[in-house]
Every structure is written in C-alpha cells, then in structure tokens.
Length: 189
Image (cartoon, rainbow, N blue to C red; front, side, top):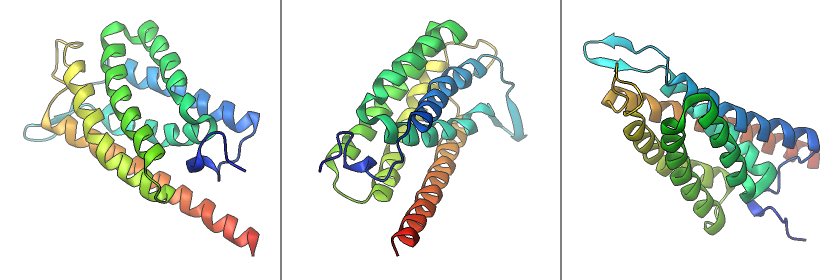
C-alpha cells in the first residue's frame, strides 16, 4: 500500500495530537522568529563579528518543519502561508515578504529533493539542508535588510550564524531520526 503523504514520511507517527503539535508549532514559530528580527539586539563577539542572535534560532524552524512535513506532506505549503499571514500581523509585510521568499525557496528545494530523490530519509534531510540553508539564509537576510534602519541584517556574521543554526538543526533532526530508527528496529526484533 502506498503512503498518500509520500514515501519519505512512512515512519512518521500520525495522530491528531502529533499533527496538531508539529504543524501548530511550525505555524507559530515562523512569525515569532520573524517578529524577533524587528527588535533583537545585535551582538558583538569580537572585532567586526556582529550578528543578530535570532539567526541561530532559525535552525529550529527547519527541525520543526521536517517533523510537520512528515505529518502533512506537501500540504506544508499551506501551513507556511498561514504562518506568513501571522507574520504580516505581527512583524509587518516587509518581513513577511522576506520570510515568504526565503521559505518558498527552501521549501521548494526540500520538496523537490524529497519528491524526486529516492535515497534514504536521512540522506534527503542532509542534502536538503546543505542546499536550502544557504539559499534560505541569503534570501531572508538580503530582504530583511530593509526592515531595520539601525542595523544591517545581511552581514557575513549573520549569514554564517544563520547557516550554522540551520546545520545545528540538521544535527538535531538526524539524531532524532536515528533514535526513532533504533527504536523501530528494536521493536521489530
């Protein structure tokens, strides 16, 4: 029997509670992170390495997105649209456009890799993040630069920290997936 949500999500536990949790968290996390770009202070670590600490947290969205997408498949685009509508209300249309463009690019990369690549789920998540994280970060920071007059968002430090945050999110997803695979293998034995 074929999984109607796609082969990449066959191991997902789907209940109304898990779906509501992951999709709801995804929809709420996007406007929260976007809103925080309006007020979060710039941190100076050393010399000219000044960055917005929220850029690190953006990797959490990738983790949550992967779990939400396992629950609802390609309908993740509708969840993204709901999150962008909330972003317009909480953070304004400029950040919604920046976020929407970046998410659309990264979600399209993710969708294409999950749809057309017939490799393991872990490999697809790794490849998707390796390609989508820099594209997403660059697009968002470039477009978010217009929102705050007191600081620039597209800086080497913000780009590096944003990509690192997403790569940390990737590590979290892979660790969770490996733990789930081990539990499933142990239960089958």
